[in-house]
Length: 195
Image 1 (cartoon, rainbow, N blue to C red):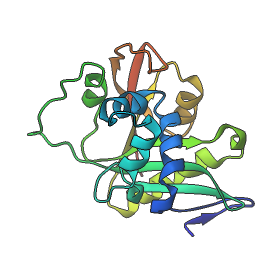
Image 2 (image 1 turned 60 degrees about the horizontal axis):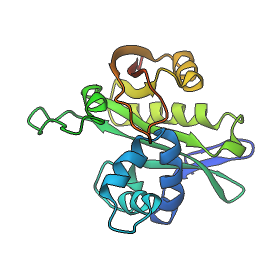
Image 3 (image 1 turned 60 degrees about the vertical axis):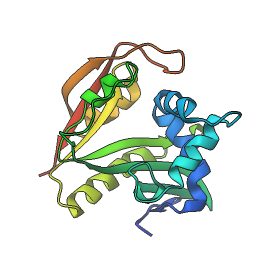
């Protein structure tokens, strides 16, 4: 066990958790994951099946190996996806116009909080804040002095949480509208330096 509270605990994700992780990542990405998974789907394949398949992979940033899950009474109710962000300067630039803004919002040499989500019926218990605290511990243990994340400016609840936790805005890019993406306006890169 990584951390225990009065009624829930956290543990490293297992391959058998990938269906729930895909559902939670879909929530956390506010439609961006659904957009990507739709493009990767085989004929007749549901987008949640694509997400599950991707998180079942190993040695990839989008893998259950980079996930921590929140468990309440043997039920997986939340997750954190986080990993080192080391920008490959020689990588081919993103060409998908919908994804270009997010590719521009990368903080090199940071611990990237890619997604945090709690199923709606379990929110309000402090799990999200504790998962963010856990991300800081993971970052420090891996030698990173800062964390980064992307938030939609219109996601006021998430933005307030990150502000409260000490993240500050570094850059922003206008979102390219798409029916699967829940917000318009800007996507914001936020960074927190560890002391």
